[in-house]
Every structure is written in structure tokens, then in C-alpha cells.
Length: 119
Image 1 (tube, rainbow, N blue to C red):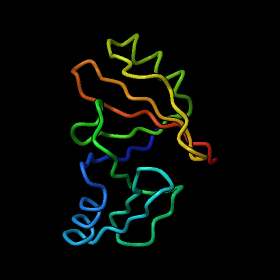
Image 2 (cartoon, rainbow, N blue to C red):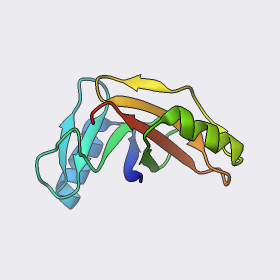
Image 3 (spheres, rainbow, N blue to C red):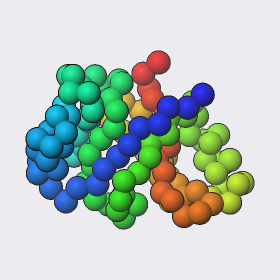
């Protein structure tokens, strides 16, 4: 079973965070690097169980991206390639939280695979 979250790109993390707080009442937590975790219910953010995040706009993250939590990025990345998708970057460690890797599906949509270090 997989869990799906979201990632929103921003040119200015503070401005974007303020926007989503003011407009939708989302709660947010700045991480020790350039990333803001968000919860859409307004409750305090639980880093192990957030709904998504706001990230700096990057080469891969130009529009909203679905984050799909998987047990093993290596295993799923192989399946992506075999099914006609594209691997956009290598698997990267994200602090003490887990690993991520960006891929494109067979139709060109960008997805982020997420493997959590927290059980």
C-alpha cells in the first residue's frame, strides 16, 4: 500500500507559506533546510505524518507534484523505468527523514518517490 502526499513549488517559501496559512488555514513547519511541511487540517504539523510540503522551485518541481510513499525507492524506480517512465535524478537522502527520487510517469507527469526512515 502506498500513501500519497503533495509538494508545491515556490519562488519564496515565506510568501507561499503565508499564503496557504492565510487563505486555507494550513499549519506549517519550516525544516532545517529549504522545505516547509504543511498540514491541511490546521493542526500542528507532525513531521512523520504531514500532508505535504512547499519546496523551492527546481528543475523537476515546476508545478504541483504528487509524493508517493513507497517501501523501497530502488525497487519502485526499477518498475518506473520498466513501465516506460523516466528517472529524473538519483535517490537522495533528505536529512533524518528519508530518501526521495523524482521520476516521470509514462505520460510525462513528474512524481516524487518517498522512502521514509521512520517506521
